[in-house]
Image 1 (cartoon, one colour):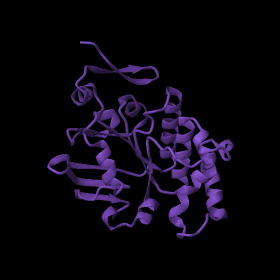
Image 2 (cartoon, helix red, strand yellow):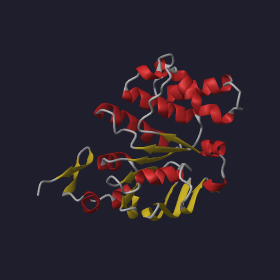
Image 3 (tube, rainbow, N blue to C red):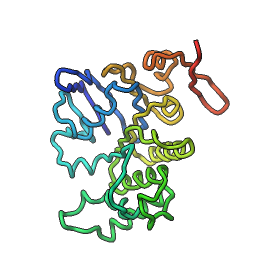
Length: 254
C-alpha cells in the first residue's frame, strides 16, 4: 500500500530525516514512535505531499506521489489531524460529505450517491444519531469519530493520523484506537504516530521507531517493541510486562 525508500529531508542546513525506509501493506496498523523533534510530523508532511524538497521516494499503491495531483492523492490516502477546529458550524453530515469533494467539479454539489456514502460512513463508526448536530458542538471524542467517518467517505484505503488521540480522555482514546484496529480488518491501512508506546503495544501490527531523524527499529510490534528500544528512544527505565490481558508497558524508578 505504501513504500518509502531512502527518504531524507532538511529544513535549511538542519537535516530532519535521514535515509528513512519502511513499508505498510494493506490491512496493516503501523505505529510511528519517537520523542518530540525526531521527525514524525515532518515524515507525515512529506507523505502527504505538503513538503516537496525531499530526496528518496514515496509510493502509494505503486505510484510515486510526485506524479500525482491533489485529487489523485485524495483518492489514495486521507489525513485525520489531531486538531480540527472550524470557524463554521457545519453539520456532522456536511462535514463527512467534505470527504467526497475530490470526486466533484469545482461548482458541483454532492449527489445522492455521496450522501448515501456519508451516511454509511457514519453508521460504520457508530454515530448516525449525530448527523444533524453541529460539528462545533461535539465533544473531542465525537469530533474525532466524525473525522474518521469523513476519511471513510473519501474511500481512500490509507488512513494517516498524526497523534490523533493526544487531546482525548482515556475512554475516547480507547474507542478511537479500537475503531481503527477494526478498520484494518476491513482492508484499510492505518499509519498513526503516537507518544504512547502502550498504544502501539495494544493495537499495532508494526512499529516504526525514529530517533534523531533515523530509524531505530522497524518491524512487527511483537518483535521490535522491547524494553531496550523504549529506553533508547526516551531515555527512561521501562519494562514490558505480560499480564492475563496482554502486554503492558510501564516506567520503573531507578
